[in-house]
Length: 216
Image 1 (cartoon, rainbow, N blue to C red):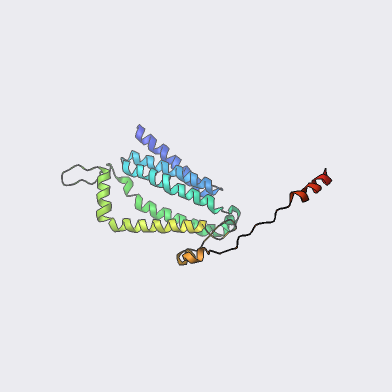
Image 2 (tube, rainbow, N blue to C red; image 1 turned 60 degrees about the vertical axis):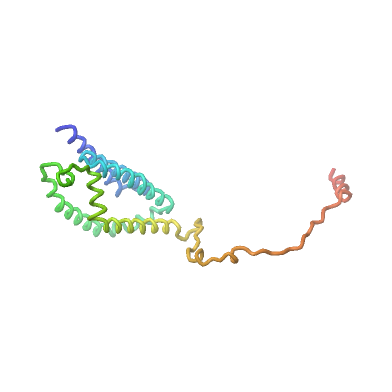
């Protein structure tokens, strides 16, 4: 077994352990941190497969942005762990059946890919060498342009939903209705009142002196 194969097994074991801890960790923050570790291991595996662009993108986009957003959302939502655990065993049989079904379907699809004897090569232009990054960019912005835009729209909706969840009604939330903000008018914000100048009556020095002597 060469060094590359050994690193692959090490990264795979760590990633499987991190993925297992994601669904078994009692603290949601710990689950998010284990998910970050799983993404790092997947990035290293992609690096071994010579997919450098995808590896760096996974670290920059998912670990550097998406998972940080997840972490802040989980911390801001102040999740009640006890309420989440209620009814766990009641729904566990159905969840187990769905999980096993998904695992079998993924295994049936991926087993064919494990029989490949040669390393996958990037798409080549007509007789010209092309890097992985350039080939991926050409595919994304030509053949898969519309799916890419749909994915961007879905991510935008997910981001808006996450912000809406953090601003749900609770005691410490300063929620303002967006409809009220749009319909607001400048004259409703501030009114100018004219008031007569007044001066508070100040006590005379002669009246304050006897009181000070009595206290002394």
